[in-house]
Image (cartoon, rainbow, N blue to C red; front, side, top):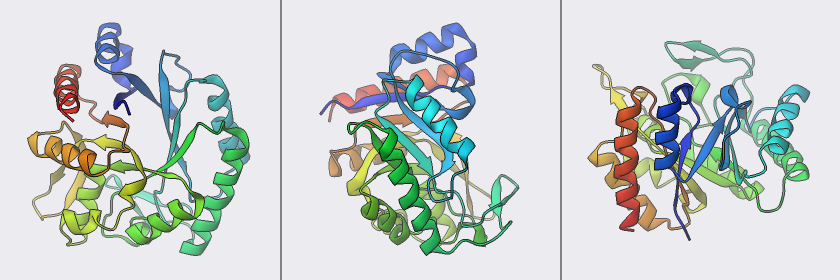
Length: 260
């Protein structure tokens, strides 16, 4: 199986030369909601803002279906599992409780309904994936970051995992677990894509998402997970601050994948 580097379409693409460099260093692209109207070659993935575990409105379904039709190269459509509340508030860049708490059983029911609808509009070759989220110490992240909950959703619906390494580090740190202990409970045998970046450790010892460029330790983790779970096909560096640093990271990722 050919492993492919999939770079996100981001603000870097406002600069023609940066966009050209990123596309040359990548095998394909990952679309995002904010840049959905842009069209590029090899748009093989779409990472939607929609939460697979929430009840979708007609407008959300229309947006998803419109982009499925507009991007014929799509192979993976991935979604979030953001919060267990209907209208979570964003405070200091993370969710706090807002609206009503949704029971885990209802979150799973929503996922079943959404997957059933997606399969009615997708080709059989297209894959549905769910991303593991990061945990912060508020009830807004209850259930949705539990490995057992994610496993149940994936297995019941026969869908894939988008494994975000930084999110896993953040969840492990903020729950007082080791990285190995937390990831052992994730359904990594269903992973088809890895989001690659580095989080930060705050002065109080908690971890936060920062989308920093991967360092040697993160690349070593990518190697370990790829060797353990060879079905993983797509590799995405999530870094958005300096196009030159991103290109260096893409070259390093290419060199790593060539050895596996």
